[in-house]
Image 1 (cartoon, rainbow, N blue to C red):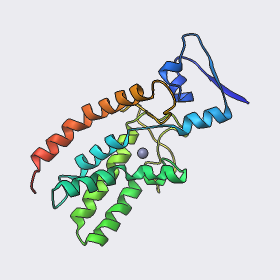
Image 2: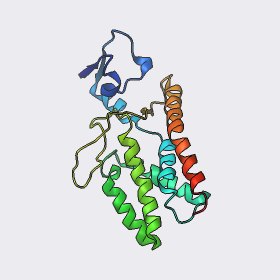
Image 3: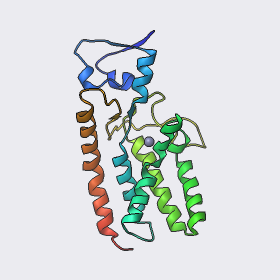
Image 4: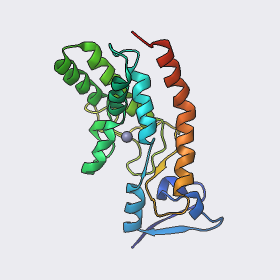
Length: 201
Ligand SMILES: [Zn+2]
């Protein structure tokens, strides 16, 4: 069953079509199965971008600054995408409500509100980066304000390009390399500045 066709203006957001698949004047028709495969396999910032975001957001707050805790903050920054494993991507895990739950849980576990705040900031960075990303999967955006509302939000800035998980396509590596370079160019200097500023306390 053909459910849609993509034109030049909208082809990536509507179909998840890569540039290599686009031909001027070509309408890209797709079946429901193709559409679902394309939708599932295209995401927002990569785990590298989210790891850097977690460090940038949580480092200054964390009471102890060392390599181990940088790894923990990186993990907290990327962990929201584990919802991919249960097929509910960008739902309640991608919300400020989840960041508050993180604050409470980590504060109770460590009995230290600074650890809770650092973990919550790292988690919230994921929500912010995905909001600034380029989603191609309907519903577009993320449930950023859950539990207040289950509406999906995405910025119109599209600062971070989409990441393709369609490894069988010829331009998979170049497509993702470009996206990761953009993430490193934006987030790398921020991480460097925050870590240099708060090296010890
Ligand atoms: Zn995400």
